[in-house]
Amino acid sequence: MTRPGRKGNHRSKKKRITIVLAPVVAAAVAIPLMNQAGAATPSEVTKDCAEDAATLENCEFVDVQVKRNNLGPNKRVSTPSNNCGSTTEREKTFSVATSVTRFITLEDGFVAAADSKLGNSFFEIGAKFNTTEFNLTRDDKGTGFDFSLTGTVMPDHIGFFMWSEKRTDVSGFLKATYKEAQDGQKVFFSPEEGGTSVHVFYPQLLKNGAPDGRLWVRNVKCGTPEAEEVGGDSSPQSAEIRAESQQPGFGKGGENVTDVEVPLSEIPAP
Image 1 (cartoon, rainbow, N blue to C red):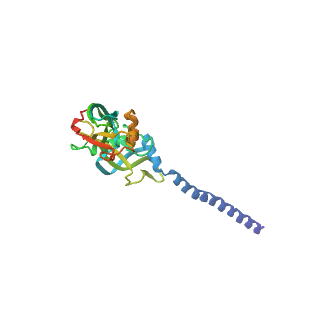
Image 2 (tube, rainbow, N blue to C red):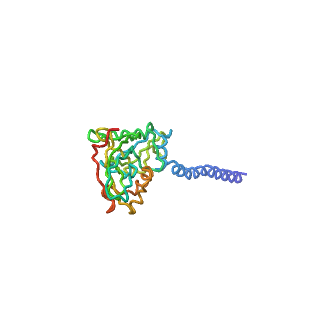
Image 3 (cartoon, rainbow, N blue to C red):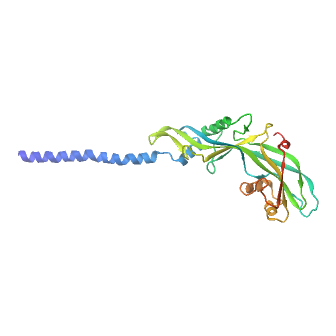
């Protein structure tokens, strides 16, 4: 009678040990999976910052490097005047117009509202580099010029005005602080801490409030590939699309292109 009782008790202990161990093994597997899913990726940080997500305690742009007098894209800012076939130069009054604004290079479609945490950070960084010597456009409101200016169109050439803005290039990274810890931490970066791939371009202004930069008259010889690129009757807006990546800078157009700079004193206050 005594021996069967001991055998039954021994089986019962084995069952209890098995039941206790099973949840421990399951928990050990679940922990790394939860940690992996909880970390905020750089793209998630960017998205949350752009949308001013409710999960964020703060999001800020951290500046690492700064470069003054960075020249922006070369843009055509007037309708071209066709003087092809003529043997004499002519004076032409052009309508010249453009605008400049703070520009952020991060991801396609990226927008940070001025009243968002990140938008406010961009403004504060702009204020940091705004001095009596360099007056910057710090917000996302554009400023520019729109006026008439006389230029000389050479014989058998197409003439128009070109513009390249001066801007302060501030590069750095995004730092996001979440209200709740993810993967045991609350602070994440995009694309990485200490990185310089996020650029914010702050247009520089003249003392009268007009954009600072380089304005010049460009004459392109008729019948050349450069003249075909201009497209004598095309609008300056369509030309600016090409100008972002294809238009050569001042004095770099080649033998068929002549550039003459215009003093910035001729640019009126906005």
